[in-house]
Structures are given as structure tokens and as C-alpha cells.
Image (cartoon, rainbow, N blue to C red):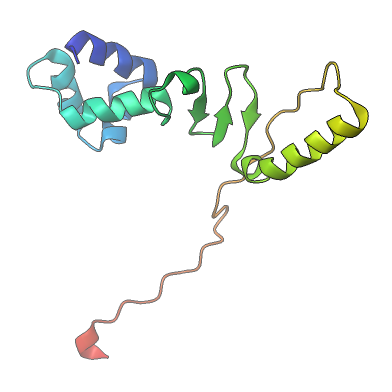
Amino acid sequence: MFDSSFRQLLFRNFDCVQSAADWFHVKPITVQRWLDGTSHINPMAEKLLIIKALGYLPNDNRWSGFRLNEEKAIFITPEGREFSPKELTSFAVYKDEYNQLVERYGRIEAPKIYPAKENLPPFRGGRRNQAAIWIPSKLK
């Protein structure tokens, strides 16, 4: 990848050098050196940046336009429809129900579009248990 392509892709996916450095698990000066051209860009950083830019989906024509939003933990289709992980797990049941309803009543001309369901992050608000006190094995 060329330095200019890396620079463009980096600033398209990150707001600042600090956020990119945090994501790559390097210091900001390292990212700055990659951008300046004073040091070679780490090949793994290039691959990670491409994966992030694609939204963790394969580089295939069938997946073009699909995205993942990390902050909200949702899957976004090219039409802008959003699905949470819980909705995707029950998708097979919804599809079977839909096919049976279409067989029985026919298709709906303009179905209403609903937003993605709220996807609560795990371990909210201090619900984790406190870690046990560490005691060296020779003192047990």
C-alpha cells in the first residue's frame, strides 16, 4: 500500500493520530512516523486498517455495501437497515414465520421499517464480581 493510500484510509477511519495509535496498540509517534514516511508502515498495520475499513467483512462483491458499527454493535445493510446480534440469532425463525405468512396471505406492499433493537453491552454498571485476593502458592 502506498503512503498516501494508508494516510487517506487512516484518516477516513480515525479522528486523530492518538485514536489510531490506541487501536493499533502503538505509540502516537509510531503512527506519525508511518504518515511522515520516516519509517516503513508495518504490514500487519496495513492489513488491520483494511479490515477495519471494510468493517470486518470479506473483500467480496457479495458483501459490498454491508458494514459493522463497532460502537453500537450492529450490522448495517447497503439499504441502511440495522440488525443487532440478538435479532440475527432469531433471524431463521423470523424467516420461517414470514414464508408461512406469505403463503397464507400474500406479500405486504410497503412494510414498515423498524430500527435495530437496543443492544445492551455486557457487564453494565459494576455488575462484575470482585476478584479474589491473590495468595502466592508457597503461602497456601
